Length: 277
Ligand SMILES: [Zn+2]
Image 1 (tube, rainbow, N blue to C red):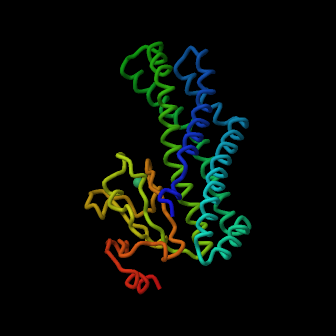
Image 2: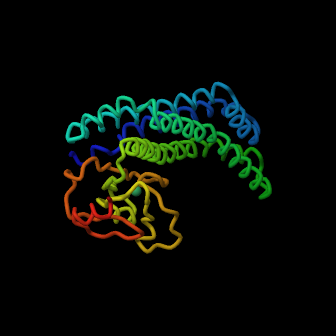
Image 3: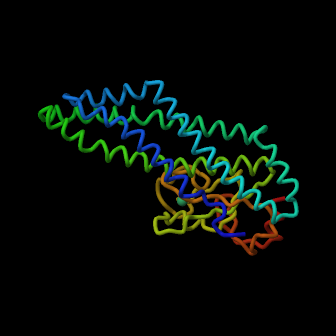
């Protein structure tokens, strides 16, 4: 199977980032006419509570999740073609929206919409803190306002980038997981984006077979302090790793690294089958 077949498309992340940034730019247009720093924060608050903005947040989340879901659906059908159980997989995929997979899609749309809705409020809160702190420092309100007008576009762009990168990964993993479980597939291979920004701890996970029921803590495996609790690829901020579902053991190369009970061990197919049974 083509190596990066399961990787969420970068195009979807960029589209999401652009939509989020456009939304924040639209708010910034009102900011040009204010006279007091606190008014800038108030504008972000007002927009966050408007019906139009909430509708936009829902539409944007819906578009991203649907796009990821459709795109991965093609990948699943490709995988089904290469598999002896292809017919069963194909039939299950055809009916999947009526079952738990459909529920996962709706849940991901709602989760993303809530994140988008929270952005202007978070920015407003940060601004209010900044204004209070600079006022205590004795700065004049005109210069605080000038600061805000200068940094708002950067803050917005960075927020859009972080959300797009983190949430596309999380959403994609959640959908892959829901589809895997619906098909009774317990295992996946951890894949990294293979670029220079991959964390050392995630580099360690490249090519390792993992069970959906037993997520690893890559940081702990890498002997790092303050390891977050265990998670699957794409489930932590700024992570572009992704799960490649193991649809059939015939297409897996053996021996292979397997994560189990807090350790990575190399196993033959027979050894793996004895623990996976
Ligand atoms: Zn990663």
